[in-house]
Structure formats: structure tokens, C-alpha cells
Length: 214
Image (cartoon, rainbow, N blue to C red; front, side, top):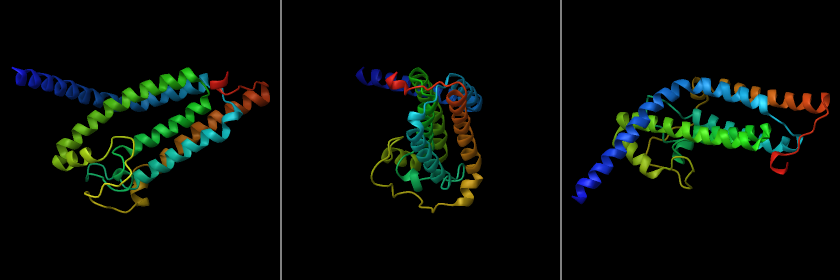
């Protein structure tokens, strides 16, 4: 009876994850619209402060470099990528995006907006990751299962994973994975926020303090 109960609970968990994975497909398709609306909302509510000018660029630059490193190794739908940053974390692209988002939140300078974006971002990424993991498991089977058991989902491990295919970084591959487009969009949004800060301070004479001190 206990085994039946455990089996029932396990099946329920798998059904729930399968449904979440299917929902991830819809979320994947809607991500570009979600990003656009989030960027617009950020520009509207932003209260940029010159006190955060230096700190906001650090996570943005770190996130861009991490994403660039990952894009130079990623061969999507060709093979299971386990080299470069993928030897330390299964989702270096999402980790890089999280760092960029942290920089944006510092630029927007709004605690409630940062909390809302983080909550929505975590929920969206979780659903998308479930979808991607289901696809990887279906495509690579035990190879991906072994990789998943050894490499954390987000927080990097100290020792690189060595059981996969080791490939060198490729600029050509990074360009194929839209490296230039990513850099352009990230810095374009940063410039727009900086422009709002200049307008607010130079033209309107308004100087916002850091949100966590106001």
C-alpha cells in the first residue's frame, strides 16, 4: 500500500512537470513580447540615480561576457553542450541574463519593480527550463541525465564537468547564435536609461537617491 502511495505521488509529480513543460512552449513563444513590455515598463517607472552609475555596469558587463562565452560553445539541436561555461552550470545563458537584469534593476532604481521582475523572471525561467530539459532528455537520454546529475542548474560548480565533449570557444559559432544582436539590445536599453537620467537631472533638476536609501 505504501508503494502504491509513493507510486501515485511520483506519477502526480511527473504529470505536473509534464504539464509545466508543455506550458513552457507557450511561454517560450511569448518571451519576446514579455521582454518588450518589461523594457517599456522599466523606462516608464525608472528613477535613475547617478549614485549607481558604476555598480550597474558591473553586472551588465559580467552577464554579457558570460552569455558571449556560452554562445561560442552552444550548438543547439546538434549536440549536448558540456564545454565552456556549460561545464560549470547547465544554464549559463540564463545566469548571464540574471546578471544583466540585476544591472538593469540598479539603473531603474525601484525596489518594487526589481522585486516584481525577479518574481516573474524566476517563474518564467523555471517553466522554460522544464520545457528545455524535457526536450534534452528526449533527445540525449542517459547522456543528459548523467550531465544533469553532475552539473547544477544555475549556481556554478567549482570543478568543471569532464565527461562530455570538450570543444574550444568559436567566434563563428557565437555570431551564428546572434552574439551581436544580444550586445546591441542590451546596451541600447542601457543607453536609453542613461538618457532618461540625463534628462531628469540636467533638464528637470531632479536627483534621485538610491532606492534602498530613500
